[in-house]
Image 1 (tube, one colour):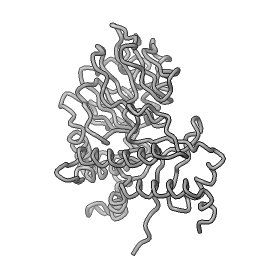
Image 2: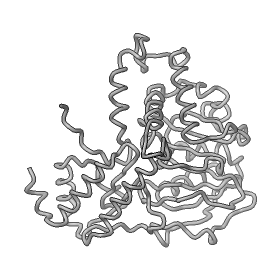
Image 3: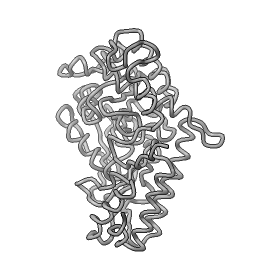
Image 4: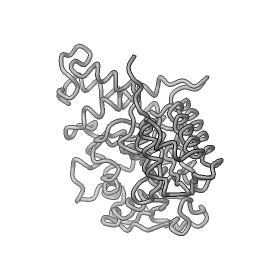
Length: 371
């Protein structure tokens, strides 16, 4: 029997389901009898055409995306979308930004190069929280309101889309996409880097309402103009073919998930809720670990925590490594620890982490003595 793989808590590039990796390995040299692997295929050929069409159909189904939304497979990650959103949607005018952590701050800073990007709300005075909706300063003539649904670094998550904002909502959904049911129709545009819940780095998913297309600024390159990408079925330039293929396998894996009577995204959402409850429960019951995020907006995907005695950090990480618990070091800007528990992380992995955390708290020296 093959040795069990370690549990990978990386924030991204993140774990991909074992089942998907095994299928990709089996098909590496010969995809469905074609005689070639997906990386060798022409993106204009019928084989890859079938792959991309199925991937789009599956992600539409999983997201429950209405027909009036275009689904785009692009490149450059969410960081590039920080520029592409204002280049495509701002009309060079006004856009409002809600700042709840590192990624939304980066989004607003980049957008300010292309439009009047106003800070509508900012949690700088209360990190780890979402500013109360009544305090937001929204402009009637803003072209959109941007927010980050889940702050990967900071561990802050919106439980539901902001309501009654007037302008179309634009959401960075990179680290929560497909982790729970989400109201696409409440938004004008969603975008996500793939390397957390969708697949490998190199692919970016954009879902945009069609009536917002066709207003890109003259400076926007043709290959990055949403309307051009949509009109060409994500094939204006050579797309990230292998990343799309892996994403398609992940979508099919997600559709197969079951949790009692629940199916697909609903099933994975129930599993994710159980994983988050288990880990936060361990932290909250502890005298060693602390999570500093407002419980009302704790992330279900990225759980940052600190050791109250930070002189134990190195020992904690070394012991975790020996237990097969990888990539737990927190982001350099916030320190501490972070466990990213995306869709591919099984409940058993979170249980293994919780067991280790409890063992370490009882006897920090055990990490040094472990073989």
